[in-house]
Image (cartoon, rainbow, N blue to C red):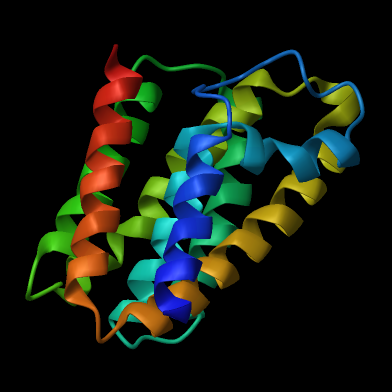
Length: 184
């Protein structure tokens, strides 16, 4: 029963956040806004939790989530330095579909699972594009701290869900529904 409660809490956290891709206008307070940012957009919250979850259900270490976190930070720098590109937002949507597909796949090929850090780069890129120069460092630090916490929480949930394929499928289905809602 604990697993069902844990899954319910995770699902509820996805429902109470505001849907947004790049959600600008909230970086005036640097570190504080960075800490809140991963919690205020469904796309970022879902991706972080699911990346950790995938590492947990596939019995991997925290290395993949750590690399995803580094990619997120790198993406923030690239987005800030290089600016917006039309392919970043579609790549974020594709990342959610890919995460769902990996959860639904029985083989969960290692090569595919390791694409999650690549997709984290796109999420970070969106952050960097919207970040004001005066708040970039504080925002990035706060965002990285909260992203790390969400990756670890997803990993812990994934470890609990290893023996529960139906709950994994339910998570994947919810992620697909979320992705479809972000399209509209």
